[in-house]
Image (cartoon, rainbow over all chains, first blue to last red; front, side):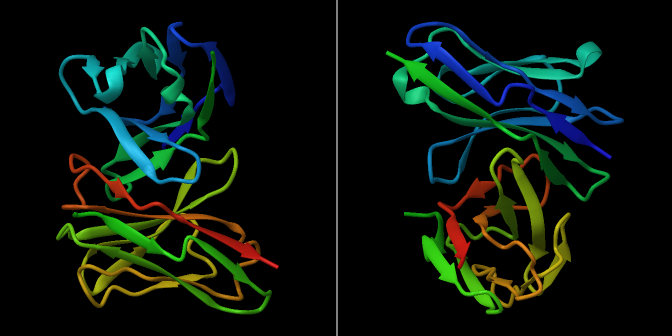
Length: 114
Length: 114
């Protein structure tokens, strides 16, 4: 069965600093990978997705993620964090075997210090 | 504006009562989904519907029921058989069930059992 692990439950960074959120997946074939962001008490918004091709994908709000098959990772990065980036971030993997359903990680809560 | 609406935003229920959460979309999407979110566990799939008049169980369907009589509506009933129903419930939709099609999320309903 597929699974997603986000090792960091909470991360705090200073505004203007760089950010990397970790995501590791377990899946037998080439995965479809996603990053979502959730503001407090709200639904989720898609930041970016990887299906195939270039392993470095660009998303909205200045985010990017790199797919590394050898490490089973899909880490999310941003070169300079803004206070408005404070939110919870979810990594997800999609499976054709599981009827095209998404499996989500437990999430990483990002706090931004002024 | 096109989007997904969920109502109510907050819902309180006494133990032993059934309660129905509403999810409506005006995006003309074929596929709709219900997720449950608990702190630190990410999102878990309850039920999904790939097309009107059809739905499938997700990972945690026990104690829940759904219907899909209209394309735009996918209500979720939390029954008294659900042992721990207090959670944040998110509805989503996508134009088709394919992984390439983004899932758009509603703002969620927070259910509290008293």
